[in-house]
Length: 230
Image (cartoon, rainbow, N blue to C red):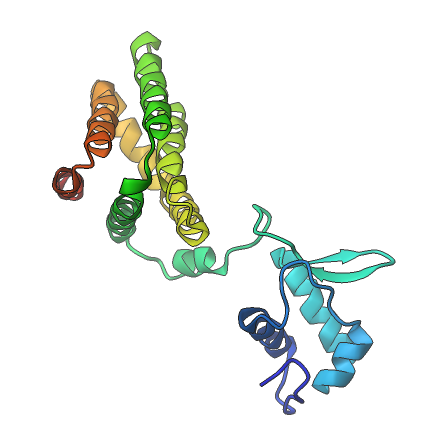
């Protein structure tokens, strides 16, 4: 079914969005492409202009299209932070168990790491060691390390590891899991800090970087097995 195929009478703005989305998936519409005008879309699909305008407003709110005044409507040229992630809200509204999400995040992060393990260069390893060193230094010099600060530094390490994969889909999924698991991870860090065990966080990342440097796949597997059993 193409973008121009007529829709049946049950069509609403959601179905117009689906039609445009399918055209993007097929490659009929590409990032940066200009959409037909609302009059042209309404005529091509067989719906009223108001329905098309409503669909475009929704897609604009989601960050999928941008309206350039006096020029037209365009598919955004690339992924950006302003894009609303329906999957994120789907997980939230589904009331998914926190423990299940945390386990999935660990399994996924392990998979991303193993996928890109052979891509780590000496410079990558050096950068990771520096980030872990920064974390250790913060913990050492701070009288009262803050969970939020440690969380941000941990994300910097993990996002860097995911970035080595050079796989945009993996990177975006990692960012999604960061968002959905952020609250639980912050609580966990606060618990660790309350127990006076902040150095444990540093040593875990230090051990992980050592395993990456050695390309130790079995060691990495054991590391994540231990993390899931905590």
